[in-house]
Amino acid sequence: MPTPRSPYYAVIFSSQRTARDDGYSEMAQRMEELGSQQPGFLGIDSVRDANGRGITVSYWSDLESIRAWRDVAEHKVAQAKGRSVWYESYEIRICRVEAESAFRTSGDGAP
Amino acid sequence: MPTPRSPYYAVIFSSQRTARDDGYSEMAQRMEELGSQQPGFLGIDSVRDANGRGITVSYWSDLESIRAWRDVAEHKVAQAKGRSVWYESYEIRICRVEAESAFRTSGDGAP
Image (cartoon, rainbow over all chains, first blue to last red; front, side, top):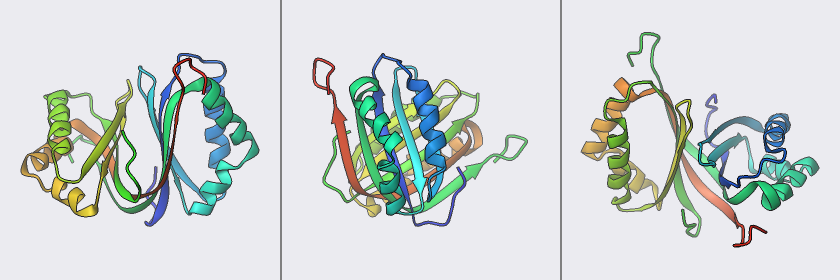
């Protein structure tokens, strides 16, 4: 995701999926769509491996935006179903981003 | 990873691997081993998907420990080879963890 001027905030969501699908992909896509329309949303990075272990980091301009997104009704329904069906375990960490750096290769593969 | 009392620090390393192996797995394992022996190291979570997109989050007690790990000689060699061979792109963000919560299912699969 693009890198705004720090400080801004990150929500680190580390999770272990269950084996049950039951609408998971649709929910995940819908939550990404809905979340990205929220005030204060800056970007999202999400990776899940073949064993169902995932890390999603969403970025926000301030803590109030994170709280507001947490309390969106449709998101709360997804959170509840996450606990009852989709996730074996998860951890959520709210962080203040204090510094950042980035690296991109040039077109020819050299740094 | 276990959740210490906040505040503590997180380093979010989001990366895209190249297709080149050339010792990548050995390096990744060695860096996790070496990093976990550093003063101030608290834990690590790492996920990479089949497309080579990865997020690794390491947790530290303070910024000084993060700086010290960045400057360890063997780690600096790995960083340089990361830029020339293993990573197409990456972003590093240093964050202060301000709040956290966790969820675990009970043994019978119910929350």
